Length: 258
Image 1 (spheres, rainbow, N blue to C red):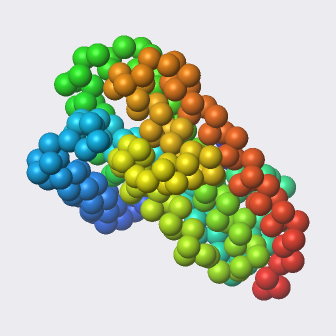
Image 2: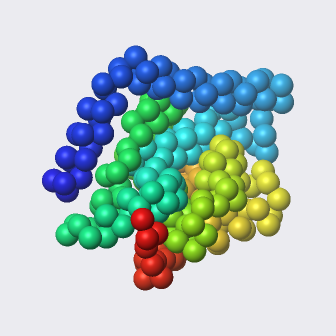
């Protein structure tokens, strides 16, 4: 942990060397999130509700999806860009250092400008809580926290899976962006508005429904089943296959020879 804090501090100092660019980058990320919120607002202004969900219900989905994704993107971005570490020989140097491989990869790239999305998401959650006093119950607040943490776990696992596949392909597979960026956008809305096969895929294969759809039902009072509240905890199981691909990739790795 001490080593990671050093990585964190060095990366932050490097970002702050160009403060204006850093601030502009954060504002740009905030702007993209705000425009996404506006698109949802205009949709509900036109149709009123979608499948029985109100604008504020969907705002919770949006905030959880973007907050979890932005935090995972911030701290696990190095896995998303792992192909660069292989092609330029950086990963070879990591292998000969007497520290954990994952820790070194994590510390090699931290994108603080992603906090722009996180900030917008936090503001949205606070606004929803203020306008809905029934959500201020301890169990509802815990549900929101678990939803965000579970979302981080899922996207972080996907980034690790993408890095693991890179050992075999050398170049990063753009198709994986379907399961990262695409899932983030899809999870802005409750999953039952999509076709049944979509809901099943994102429940049993890529379990975004465990942090997006089912906890939301408990949060907005559509069910009193407390099991739905703790479903995000089960997303930790998703780490296992993703980490397994990563470990297999390391065992198969033969160095770039650079």
